[in-house]
Length: 266
Image (cartoon, rainbow, N blue to C red; front, side):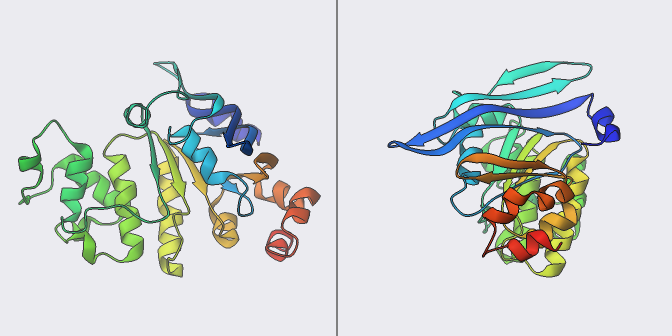
């Protein structure tokens, strides 16, 4: 990582993964993975099918048991260093760690702003949350602008385009004040225009949050990643800038016959 980035990340938030392993019935899906994702550094996690990418995210968010350590570290005016492994899914979410899945999970019969209302909670009853709003509160309006859906705030979520549903799901994490976002293939099935808009959205939100993107789309990765971690057979194979990773002969060998041309000739 360059010196300017290192200086930029002296203060802020980090997701520090150390020696994490996940074993299913004797099969090691994640094998001693260590990596750090930092605020202001849009990190992509790539690798062939079965490399352990989604399983690693599942471990971080409490969906599968794991060994090792996953810590959310905050440096600055209020330092914090919180271990996540061993905690319940809802506890990890309350600590500011949010994730999306490959298929957007939104309440399709409710409006865009109602989805954000439910995600935010705000201590209100379900009956109140389900009422249609006549206007958008400032906090929700700010998120709507960020995700590019301000003009669709009263539209039923089920009528949104595929990409817009993904943006809404990201917005639902933002209104929960998630400071660590783990996004599983966020541009799968999107049009080129939607992918461009999504990449720009991720750049915006990664400025003051940790954003880790699990992705197969090499073109999208090359266009928007600040740094890349490559997993293979449950282990970290390579890590660094896009140029560093693409020049790594081990990465070229792993992708040989699949994405080798894309990796080598970017």
